[in-house]
Length: 204
Image (cartoon, rainbow, N blue to C red; front, side, top):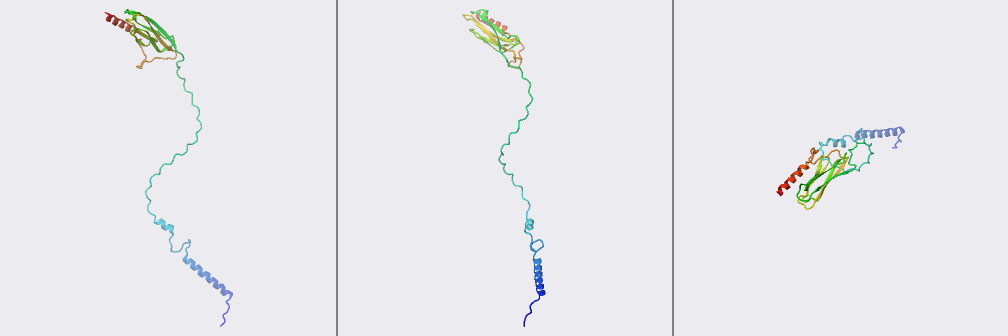
């Protein structure tokens, strides 16, 4: 028996049936979102299995200091301060002297006081003598000077007691070590009289 050649219409029908059959198969095995039907998304599954958040870890170490920044611009100049007190511009001296007699007479014990020139105040001073028994008064007085006293009692020769005071016009006031400005003159005459009396009493 001889087979007949299929007609063009038959060929078109067969091709259409093949495509139709393939489309149904794909639709049956593939989801609309590109995943296979019935297969769970892996990311969603992993997310659903995540446990609770753990505690915060310890703080990390502090990093190294960074490089220093650039120096900023200089600020504006400040206002000028008040003028300071006048200092010691110059020093002048005052001097006094007295002869200390030889022997055991009263004039072998005596004192002298050097006074600062007008308009100045004492800043220091000193006493010099060749007295046998030395100097026993050496200090500043509120008489604006320096005083000294020496004892030459019993010396075979006389000597000279010299007192010098250093003064300046830049000194506003004089404060002594006890923190008080001296308000009473050093009573040197009394000290001299007492020393003379003691020497006379010892001589008998």
